[in-house]
Image: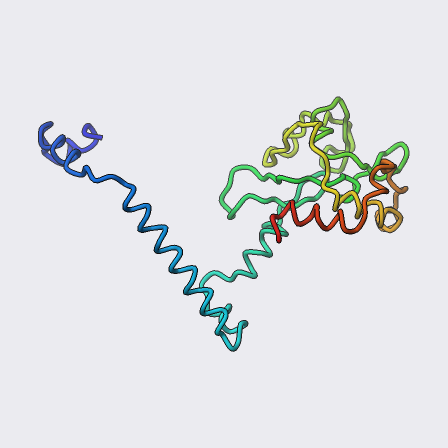
Length: 215
């Protein structure tokens, strides 16, 4: 740091050492004070929301709207996975790569097998780890290996991991609405695994709650 300051400030080595080592108090008191302040702020906000006569008016007065932030968490900032169409979960608009913790069966994003015309039930994370290929308008309908998807989608980070499974919720959705999706996308229904058909609505909702840490 000193070499960048010597052009503008005359500072001896001894003075520099004295300045740097004068502050010797531990950081723990500051951390504890910060935790107490945050807890007090939390209680204050809870009191304001609880005693508010018009919750809509209270929300509208906030500089950052909770409903807007929740919407962005669920639907992202408009960027979707090129295969399954799951929204980007990266916080804020300024990030180098889009990513999502949980991908969906690709058929939900309109992907289908060009030979059988069936909706694809596998996850993007599985296929980018395989030798499979894809083709679409972005590749000008030429076949391209999934594992080299970044040639066309450099802004997306899709981890190649065949052990990742779709949440029970999305398995349930594809099973229950397989025919509707196929008609909507002008395709044949996906070949869903038999185990997916045994997932109950309660299990699907529990999986959704677990995925988004909802109680």
